[in-house]
Image (tube, rainbow, N blue to C red; front, side, top):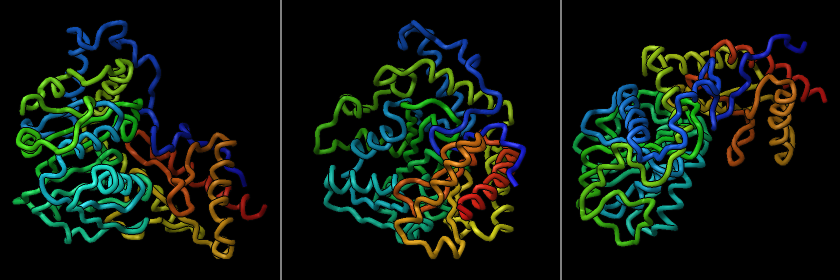
Length: 382
């Protein structure tokens, strides 16, 4: 039977993600509008965003935090174009975005010494094969596959290379070992449900040293330049952004950080995400038509949770027809106002993708599972 209770918030999109519970546009009333972002008031807001980021995430005092253009993509590209080429690089990929960074390094930067390690959707690469004397670029959490690295133990403390980590669907939901990470990037519209187009670039002292001692052989667009005269442009990491930010988006990010602090900080955010994943795990364990795309719980994402259909009826369908099944499920639930944007990523195996970050409520996930069962029965009977 069709469930009679819907999730209070049907927003399960993996990006942009759900706003925090209770959010309204009133949260933006204190935005610094109609003023220059370089005014005293504008710079104060940007500096506050950096300071609160450090406080909530526990970023070490000697790490630099900057607000940069073009979302997480801009932050990753800025790091790769500015730092890679000084030594060989290991490129790790097990989903769409990681594969995109491989393409940029191999086909755009055209570095000579590149080792590409990839794994199919639902798995990750052999992390023990990473060379500590080489740079490494990787996603902490594969947003389009639901596969994540289990921890940072595979990263050597005495490494000579830099670790460049795309953490956009992991930060604020997973415990990042800062001493293991030299460059961390993310965007506001992911885990904390902020608005788009702004990226965060966090640099260790080792990353700053690379920037100040290495000049890449290719020209750098202005939007990527982090040094001047061989020295880091400190203003970028104090709120003097490279381009004009949206102060509405800044205010929204500040609101999400204040919400995180009200919950008790990072530990509470991580706990909420784990509770959401647990609600799906309980459902999958007793449901015979669905399973996780990532079989190993140790590398299973607690944010971008990817599911696959395992019913014999589905398996018997022609391959060309299979993508249409999860798409129909997603469409049914959207029409009912029970879930939005849960079809799997276009490059991933046919399935569903449900965001379970901290801005999602666990009881909404539980309500969603009843709707998923209903939608499956509807599609299979059609």
